[in-house]
Length: 411
Image (cartoon, rainbow, N blue to C red; front, side):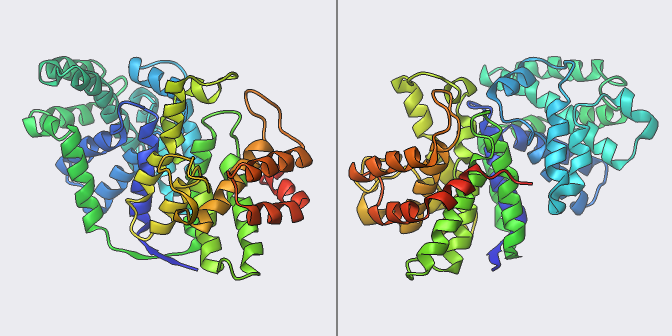
């Protein structure tokens, strides 16, 4: 079953989740892309190459899930081992054919020019271009946060020039000096200008049919990024997607749901926790009770998921189902406080799949629970008005298979 969407728009929207890792700075990848495209335009590259460079910039930090690692990448201009996340990101992209052409530049986006110049082709040049724009943005972001960008431009420029012939290709440094001499180059990095830039790209994108296989692949790709956020959530989203699709298949037999529902629900399962990338590592890995402030941060993740997915034309249902996975029949869920029939059946199924998968996995405060104990917990939640009885009955009738799906590790 194809969905009528634009794959590039899907990738652009999902890339918003990567910028969430910055917590308080959510435009890093976009600013890097805006600067890099300005430079390749100056080099005379065509539109297709400009688009490819921009997409690579949006995804260059796809290997970063940890807020602690992100902090180090921002606070230190260069450090040994910084290329680790670039290699991880490249390995993720290499396994997804529609984006595999971005793997090499992304793998190289923390590699010094002195290590590249002996075998310096177009992919290496793009990798070094991303490196340069990335480091400019790290310096500029701090200055913008302190409302000092204009005053800091000379120091930022000097820092880049200092690394010409070492970290950065001297020819790229010359191009940077040329384009950054215009005030517009720096003004384009402001939040409002970045949003306008992305809106223009979305308006220009044409919708086309994308196969379910391709959409499943891109959803799985981003689920790996989310699940890598904590060692306790490895493969969580894949498990939720498997269980949700399985439960949907059973409910189809009673005409509760249809084939299209099952396909979309699987995608929602992969993507339901995108917003968790904005939660600091220490909260997700905390072995004890959360404070009220920490609970509010966790509660916000479902809304972040909605914000990202609702930007994708054709993903309207997926956005709602994914972001409603913490809503409850009794209206005590979050973040929308929906009640009863306000929560679509698909979102209720996804909620049950999410809870089952979480109970069947290790968590900071407990080990994975055996199947019967998982069911006992879900029975109590059903009696408390937190789960639907008919979904609980389906799980109870197929407990061993649902538990197997929760424990399954992809080959």
